[in-house]
Image 1 (cartoon, rainbow, N blue to C red):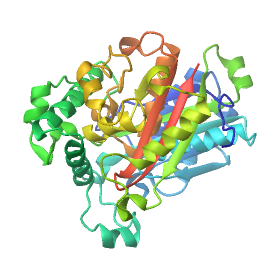
Image 2: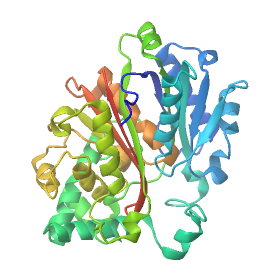
Image 3: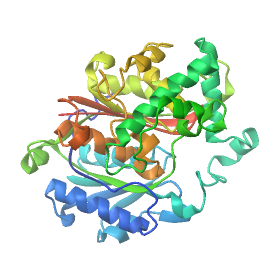
Length: 398
């Protein structure tokens, strides 16, 4: 394996808008708001940004195609700007492109932006992906939905590890209730209300066994990061946060086409995590990672991710959930900011929103949510379906 970019780039500024139903804001407003906070945080001026990347998914219906919306909104006069898209992992993709550009020496200071205005699409959930998955997938999975795909994974997981429907739903309910508790402490989160385990259990079913509180909501929002070299970072601030690993894994189609995949885990998460730990030099993630922000599009996704990231042994994540291992005061807190479940999921922004929380936590600036001296933070950003996905795993440290 190549040596990677461990400690070769650092984050010196980040910005994140409130997430929610932002009817009075357009995509350009969100990009400007996020950038202003990042510039103030870093002490840099806009003219010092050498290059920028924009992560957005539903380009045709809100942000617009190409990199022009970002360059126009921020007035990045004739700078090299690029738009990237990789389903729900688009935010981390923009960060990855900016980090690689700095590590390669192509530029000194790069901006990674993620934004989405889903409420403007007029859909209660995600808009129709149309031809986004290609003609082959439309023929094979003509009626595939995200709730349906992840509900099938929950059913398979319960069966494989001997959980009754009631037992499985209660484990998932603990995960959702935990995230609602955390989100209630976050002034930028979309949903800020405590929800009990019993309320989650009794909620209307969306796709059995997943109920209303097992599913994240869609939101509007934007987030960005300013990335530079370690040398410049040290000259700007005493507490830059360093990238320890940044890995991506994309399905080859094996999961859907071969019965070696049993549907109870996400293969791309497993593959990206292995490479990320190697790049970061982490031998025992359960002991070495201080906090995590994972892609909890559904509560079952968070449960299997605990195992796919090698935090919990196979089939044992239930024990960790029920013991409070991932709670705010647990050994490895997960979704400190409320996660997708409460922060909401403006697709292009979510990956950078996760990094924003880890960045603030490692600097000791997470206000009421602040953990006690975290050392290593991990983000997990997933796009697609269990049977075919793209996954980014990133690790950060002081």
